[in-house]
Length: 365
Image (cartoon, rainbow, N blue to C red; front, top):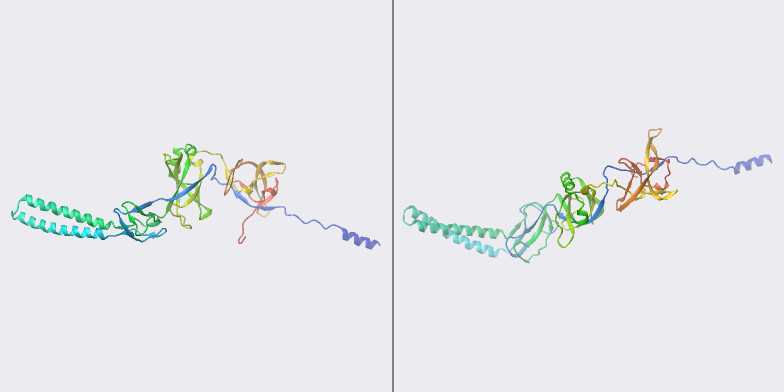
């Protein structure tokens, strides 16, 4: 009986609890010195930094169009041609008149040297010769004007004309842009432009430091850094907005042509001189304590050194005031400094003093 009771007592005893992990890995983001306070978003349009609207100097029927939007051309390439028959006839007539005037001039010159004619007759022949020469040069130019050549190497961004269309002088046939950089223009409302300080705008232009981020419809998840270029001093016609231009290197991973739409995220405080100490953090970094759910906080990582040299630490709450939301995160204010590391994932599971270690991405993970 005693032995049986001992066996039953051993079977009913609870298993010892499993040892729980005391140091938890957390994903962190470091606040850098690039404050992104005062972000404003504007719809924009792409324009070429260096571009030219190519047109003929004379009118006529467009018989050849050798390019289309997106084509690359070299300097001197013929991009379009007009019907040249009329110009060719005029050149032949001018050549005939010049040949006759030249022969007459030579005869008169020899006769003048022999005192066979008066100086007045020679001057008349000379004037006719010079006039015929000028007419020939003009006819040659008129023929050359039937060819439209690329003034520099670049990319065709727009072709508003069509073959066999009768075009006028100075009518845009193709638009050519030089590769290397592009501009994005957008309209800034009057209430915003009033806050722009000229010295800040000049400093931004001279430094060429990135102060805007541009996204395009083809790759909405990718941002391209842009710098300030200029803004108009007069309002756009029929509106109370002013055109602002930012510039950026032409993306190598995306074909961007003049006229395409874009979205500009502008660090407005760079132009105004304002500084509200806002930081951009992922939305998942913001949480609240159970004891005070109305007060937003983030968890700041306080580093320590582990027994084996591994970096460990604990987290402490920092009260913050969330601001505007963007596609990249949330702007917030608080007692934070550049270099602080903030928990960005699982922040709602943290508690003050909890032991954590930075999560390091490993190969394949």
